[in-house]
Length: 373
Ligand SMILES: *Cc1c(COP(=O)(O)O)cnc(C)c1O
Image 1: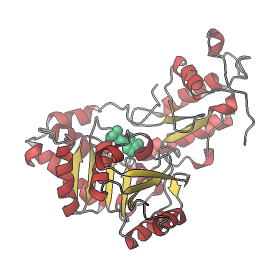
Image 2: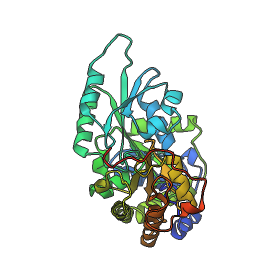
Image 3: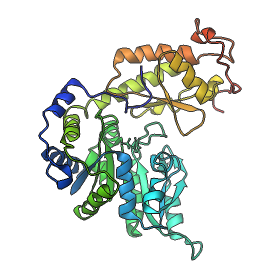
Image 4: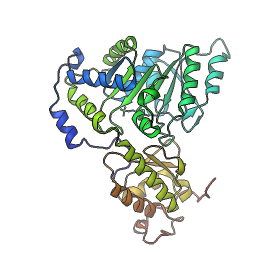
């Protein structure tokens, strides 16, 4: 069972049919009707003027950096955000931006930190802050939904200072479904937004950058510059159109299953991070409590037949629910994870037959900690 990410889903029967039947054209010439339709629909969903289909959300974020910054400018983002940790420094490579991480509380930066940095110019050599990037839901913060009132406050301050605000909304539909708010409302404070089709929506690829027409005209040029202009991309866009029709409301099922996974695992003694606040589809486990490192824990789980993945926090791993995980899978996962992690310094499983007894090579390498440490 693969709970490493919501990117591991394979296109469903219906999605494949939609892809096979897609009406296509040369996307690079603006002639692919399915791409155009997807762009139109996503712009409407987000309440923005225009959208540009791109191969990945990573490229969408790179384009945002190119749109909003000039070389030597500064990009501010929460310190464990995807733009800072998982995009190979693209904002620096492509747009020449210096990046600066801000402390976060469940993925949300403090508006006062933004104000201090943007108001206080410590020296004539200080870089100009060109953009602030927020991430909703926040991946490293366990799929946390950003508090919209604080998002609006950050955006207001940025607007007053002519600083662009970009939303990395790779999981924006998760945020909207989880918060029971329209996607449009969550996107409203931002100049530009990236959304991803290959996460919870279950598409084999694709993302969009969304914003005002003038910026999206430039975005299209940057997309081509980065090598992202495609040809009969309607085959991929058709998956997106299908997902927007069939895979949005069901995200609530992923969230419910993640909540069940978190509460059952906690009940079984597994150290779940913020177990009461699993808001969307990501469940984090602090394996240091079980005397394990990330690598040990993921290895044990893998050998138990279940895939989990690391997070930016050294002792925290995550399980992600998605389209290919059903209720029965969650029940199986609870048993599997409990057996694989419920070990006491290599003395064997406390709850009976521990698979690690069959694997003498696995020795927990970190001292066991107590809860709350
Ligand atoms: C996955 C992800 C991205 C990048 O998406 P790709 O389409 O895989 O490039 C960007 N931001 C966040 C928060 C993500 O989780």
